[in-house]
Length: 200
Image (cartoon, rainbow, N blue to C red):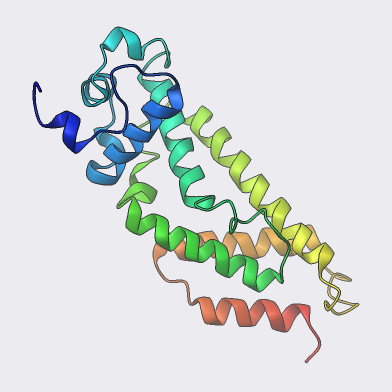
């Protein structure tokens, strides 16, 4: 063995068969050292492949970072195919609770990712990163709307003044803002949702 790298970080062997295998190694690097530690040379070394081989899978560092960030978000939001947010509809307060639990687990697994992942992109690259994030947000909001549509217990007048889309947008904005500030009182938040949606 040339070094202990193969033993410590053995996710991809010398015969790399897909970009997904390389991304698994990138995820390990993010867990251990943060998203800012991810670059082409370092990843190629950890995968025990040449830099040239890595360029067969990723156009450049920007492409690598975009795909790595996307892979981290997938791992956070879809950690278990049997439990992730798409699997079944549920009351909206429970859906937000599930998202909160997934984000909390993700913060432990990938320390500082939430605060750092937008900093690794240059100004010209942030448009791509934002578009990628917008797709995840649209997906989540779509799921929350489905939860409302499938819930027969919601009171008849719940959306007379404000549409379901407006309610989801409002709640999601509060949720994300408070989570990022570390100030979200989840019990208060879910109680507010339930009191708004249901007759008591």
